[in-house]
Image: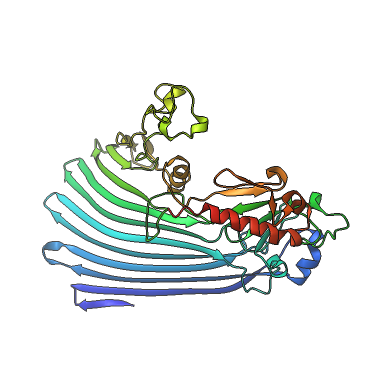
Length: 445
């Protein structure tokens, strides 16, 4: 709906859109688990999308045009994302506020913009309480996620949940032009304060259990994934989800930040009726995407058992310089990102054909995920960072705790014995090991 508030002066527009889709997908797995597929043939996949928009435009005095716009989008999607019965719910909330002014003075045009946008994605388990899908946790009594990659069989709470991703941007921008003769000069600048954050508690709420045909126990039923098989291995999430020690978005960790700034100037020159040339220069920067705020580690940060002559706890020498001089230099901010560009359009004769060409330098940014994944490995600060331990198979019948101690039994039962037990029998014991591992991983940071 839209229309004038004041005739020829002030106008409004509003819009609301809603999509509601209750769909389901067919469950598909190998013939080994055909009985389960027959009992649970469908995967629920509901989808919701609501988008709202409101805008006001004002034809202000002296030829100025002013507008303000607000928007809010909410989507919710339940799906297995190719993981059979292991569902998660993805919910996105995106509010946005934008305003701007456009006007002309002499040979100049001016455009000012300012805005704020926030993105919040939340992943949560989609299996709890859903009786139309197979869930091993119900029969075992503890949360268990099953993965048989060879047979394409996945069930139980989704190992990616819970997870939250936050991003916000506050931007101001100016764009202008100046026109004279055969030249049209464009110029502008922008500044955007970007914040990122969130958490990802992978493997945290359920016992991630990998198995396959090679793990069939003696006399076991191949069609029974929890009683017929031992685990190839278990993954124990530490219950933490931060990848940065910085607070952000109300959380005590997971925060990231960036100042994105840019300016540009360019000229479009009508050289002749047949030839147009363009020249430009742009400068842009994204700060701290490579964790430039972190110092390179010194020898004093090395564990005493790993120190060596010339690199001790009393030495303030740069650790990386011990391997090659110069490796310990701090990473610089990309303040030298100057990007020249040049192009042309040549359309001879009757202008039925046009030949175009151009060249330039362009810079891309690094995504926040790369920043956070590298930071938790490099920062020398206390914090509840994500990590995991393995048990059985390639990880052996032991769990290495955060303090370096090794657990080889639980409640008087050897973990080598537990590793050989059917999943339904072993899972409660492994869950007890996991609880101890998670408790030891909580630093309070």
